[in-house]
Image (cartoon, rainbow, N blue to C red; front, side, top):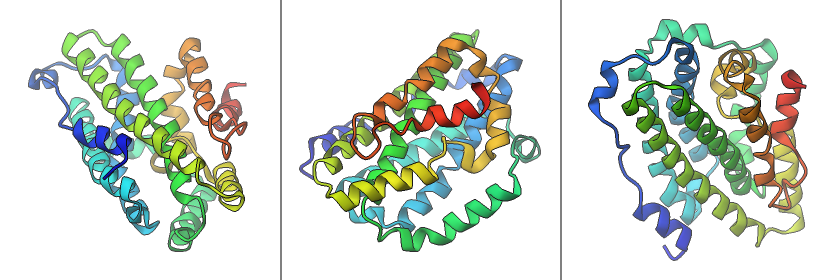
Length: 256
């Protein structure tokens, strides 16, 4: 394990730090829905982890070190958030809404994973998707931290954002490494796959309409919306994704 970015990540991983007393007080009512949606997305990591295995991501030494830790940390996030809002299956179902098109798309994507593992640039696609996913969650948790009334809750969401920040730095380092070694075919394949299949974190488990239902209220804050739009700049650093404006394209469907 010679890569510095891998060593830095593995050296600094650990359990989420929070006080048990956080569960004794409720969140503000206007945050229950968005935190519940975040919990569902974090718990969906189990499904995403299975996809990374099907895609053969464990054959890359840096990702094989990162992914088990990432799954453990994200799953812990989901469990803590679910407990914080007393999330149950019945309420979860009210937040999820898939169109017929989305159901068909998800089925096709899932069935294509064993073949997609052989496409050049899939490891870059995974990490570029991770860059935007982590940036979205960092912005979300820091915004929630501003809106909670209890210090212990504020500290929890800041701690969540810090862990997501570690994931973000790892993903960016992998993207930089892969771009330095990609050939023209790999770059083109990565760009096409991102352009056709990228969706914000949470859409896979909530559906597009469910995502907007849960997250649009907090995105009424124009400063947060602008910072979320600016997350595309992170991918502009890498040739395969430069100029795609993926987050802006998605948001423009509802926030133009």
